[in-house]
Length: 138
Image 1: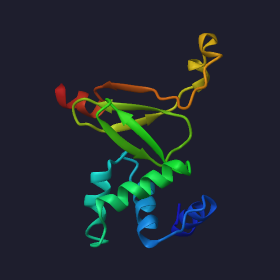
Image 2 (image 1 turned 120 degrees about the vertical axis):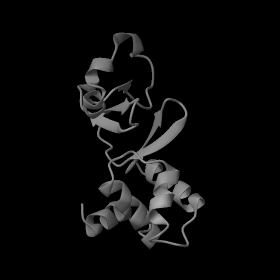
Image 3 (image 1 turned 90 degrees about the vertical axis):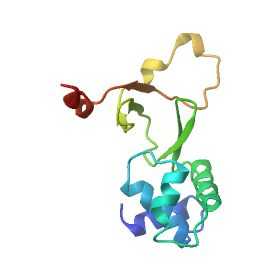
């Protein structure tokens, strides 16, 4: 997505497209690494010296509220952000820490036993060893 598309995404979500907000959204768009607030902050500080962690956190919070970014919780200890908002699962390599997206039919987790429940989110998280790290072990 180019800068104009990102700007329009913010406008459509009723979020004022400030320079900092655009850079944070652009970072997420260019880095599908499921970054944390700290990672985004560290990587954008050279570009935006006046940026604060609070600004990054508040911006991401507004993106999540507007549903243009998903907040994902990995191992109940870290919160990461994902610009891919279509339903998908996550796999984290226990060796290198890389988080991968994967697709699967989400109706697999629709259960008759949950028919009376109001589900706010569906998250599938798997962990193990990625192919790259498996090659290193050999």
